[in-house]
Image (tube, rainbow, N blue to C red; front, side, top):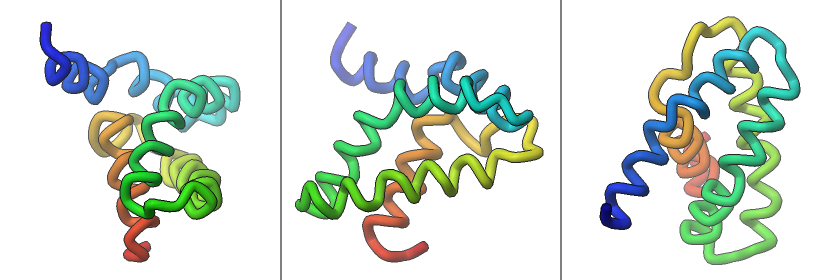
Amino acid sequence: MTMTDVASAATRDPDLDALLVRAASGDCDAFVAFYDATSPRVYATLLALTGLAQRADALLEGIYVEAWERMRGRSAPPCPGLQWMSAIAHRHATGTV
């Protein structure tokens, strides 16, 4: 298994998607677990895009607030959970929100 295989598997993690499905029904614990599992990677994306730890810190919370709001009432995330979060992070970091 290569590093690329590991990264690809992480973006399709069914457990992360299952956590988002549970969060969509209002399960706060599931969303916290999703945050704990994905926030280091999302933060790394923000840091790479902005180059500033302070800016990445400031954006991180807003990204997860948006995800929480957008998941309400959905039966599944629009794409694999980590991929979806990375897309939201990219929009926030580049100012295309």
